[in-house]
Structures are given as structure tokens and as C-alpha cells.
Length: 132
Image (cartoon, rainbow, N blue to C red; front, side, top):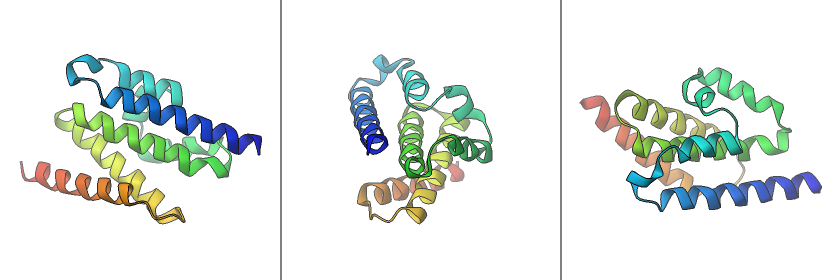
């Protein structure tokens, strides 16, 4: 019960912080996305550059009951990060976000229309960037 309360509070705090970040002007966001990675998941450099197999393996440190929620937090960070990143980094962050959202969608027992919409948007944006 305490573990469930902890993860629920963590998720609540994460989405509040992410919402504050997203509601700022792009010019004022600065390195805040890096702080969100560091505060809620771990080193931003690792999550941005490590092979996805290593990223997925990193979730083994958490109890199984928390893994999907933590993966969803990372998918949301990738999604937000991709909005301001450009070029190769932006495309890579979109691919990572789409892969995580897809994994979560296959393993989560709840239907999440927001996730489905983000997956569709990411697929469309990636298809557009592949043409360039």
C-alpha cells in the first residue's frame, strides 16, 4: 500500500512539473527538461543517448508494479523533449517516445486515448521527417 501511494504521488508530482514546463514559452524552458529527467528518472544523458535496450534494462531496478508507470513518465519526457529538439536528436527522441508508448500500450491493461493520440501524432511526424 505504501509503495502504491509513493508511485501515485511521484506520478502526480511528475505530471505537475511537466505541465509547468510545457506551459512556459519555448525560449524560457532552458535546461528544465534535463532537470525533469534527472529528478524523476535519472541522468538525462543516459536516457537521451543510451541504446534503447539499455534504457529498458534500467527499469529492472524498480518493482514490476511500477515499471510501466515509470516508462510512461520517460515516454512523456521524450515526447516533450522532442518538441524543442531539432534535427537528428528530435527524430531520435520521437522514435524513443513512440517505442515506449507502443511497449506500454501492448502491456498495459487500460485503454488510454491520450497515449494512442500521441502515438499517432509521433508516427505522422516521423513519416514527415523521413521524407525530408
